[in-house]
Length: 227
Image (cartoon, rainbow, N blue to C red):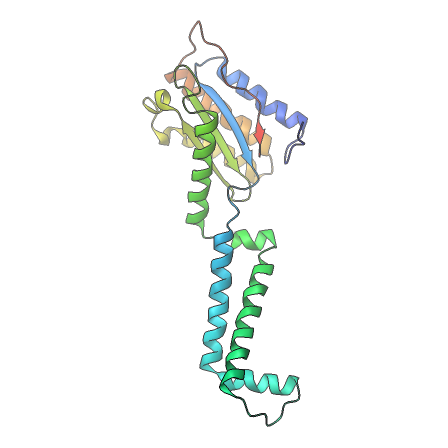
């Protein structure tokens, strides 16, 4: 069995128990997922590195004497006659160094995620949540009553997605209270409590719009999934 990434056994049990309690009053099936991150953002890291490299090249082109003089002082090249090829080689070298340096800097996770624009984080989290939803909840129940509560830790974002039978009765904004209690708890460092509270709020909505049927059975696992 894989070791939990964020939560211990007791915390997993807390969320699983919340799912079981919520599903006791509804035909809806709640799936909970916590992801370390929703994307690698390699393209964003490359974009920043390219931007820094081209900015450095632009600065060299604007004030070449500064860099040429700096190289002359460092390497004791007083009075050196620079050829066009040498100047071009120096400029390319500076660009490469800046590119590599920026890529290496972004190995520092907090800095890397700080540099990712908010709208991109939001879109990638939604895309990853949609992927999990399609695999783990969408049309996986007889009545199309699956619902996903998804939390992405690095991006500090969450998604609640509902299958057809629920989405037809419950508009997306209805999940606002569940999202609010989830994020409030997480800001205090209580991830499991946040997920459990969100599940409880989701359960209230589902119990109202999709009450439990007499022949209802548990079709999806109640356990929290960490990826």
